[in-house]
Length: 118
Image (cartoon, rainbow, N blue to C red; front, side, top):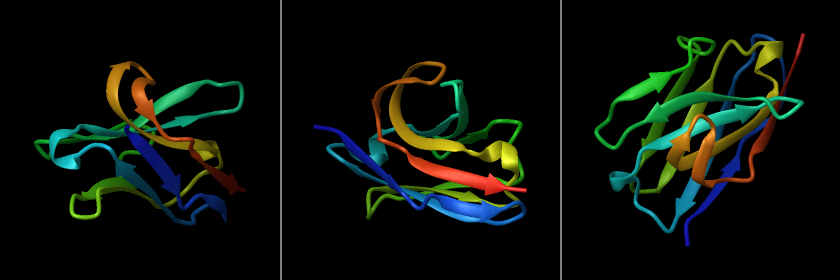
């Protein structure tokens, strides 16, 4: 059974930083494309970043240059380093695997709340 558990969210002021973690079980990061996406109030979602199994990365334009995705395969953990945070980054951040389309995945975690105040 695949399980994804996020942690590291919190409340910060604009310009601050947070590092999110996603501990995976039931799968190997060596064989998986991993994603972070976020949900805003009203359930709108945005794909934030991807780290593919062949080490290619992708970022949404809204976070490019500020967020960095990485992973530690030995710990089966994916990270999202978020710097220069803005109020519009506020949302629930989920890690996920096996994309279906858009923000729809076969497996996703329960999410961690990020709140950025101005």
